[in-house]
Image (cartoon, rainbow, N blue to C red; front, side, top):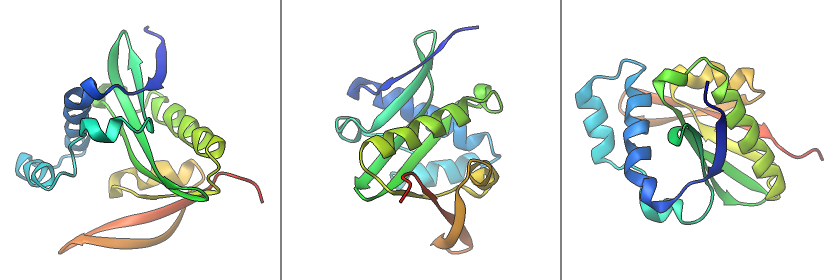
Length: 155
């Protein structure tokens, strides 16, 4: 089994991370037309400019990206803007590894809390990781996303 390496993303990986994101979202049974609509709205697209700020972290195995996350915001309150896994590694513990790395990175950057909008299929994962549901946001008619928050610094 290949060792997992976590590292800062490179702008040249934007296309590969976009493809991984679409595969990850598709794993949950979203039809291609929904994925196309999300991509058209820029929601499943990773731009090189987003990667350049150094807050996108990639998990790779054998030199191939298999997951990634992005932190945004300004301390003390940040956002876990994205966390995606290639379907082949869902259920292997890599999600927990990325989550723990994101929380530690947020703590090191001076964040006190992280908020995230979760895909409904991923909410259980985030709750198991210690996040709590603090609300919801309607992103389209009939499409509501859970809003979750986790404390990353002790007060």
